[in-house]
Image (cartoon, rainbow, N blue to C red; front, side):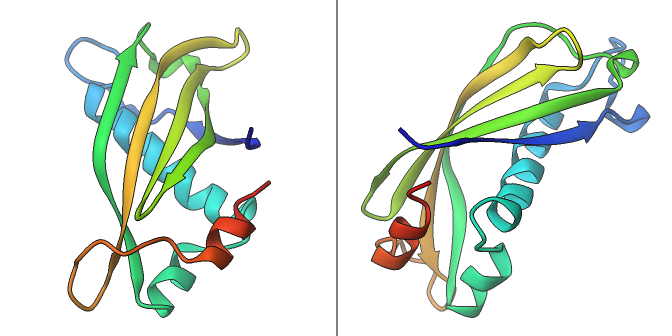
Length: 136
């Protein structure tokens, strides 16, 4: 099992839709924001380092199960992620978006990211040193 990391995110007024809760598309923004934060803070491999090595990540599959709405009054949410597995060029990440103090799950799911080479945009196997560094 891999470690679970957490990023706190402030719910902003522009996240709110006409139904007075966070728009479903913002959940993807929250996940992306958390991954960038956690790559640098927790895994010690910032996205810029991947790009410097000629790599990047693209989301190849996303599964979100919406459990309950997030409101502006919730103030802060937490995005927790956990690496599930590496598979060649792909990595599966589990996530949970958790509402403030009550710790209720607002959404959960998985994102499959595919490593690509910046030069040609084609999938490439995740290098062994990255796999090793993510073994935390």
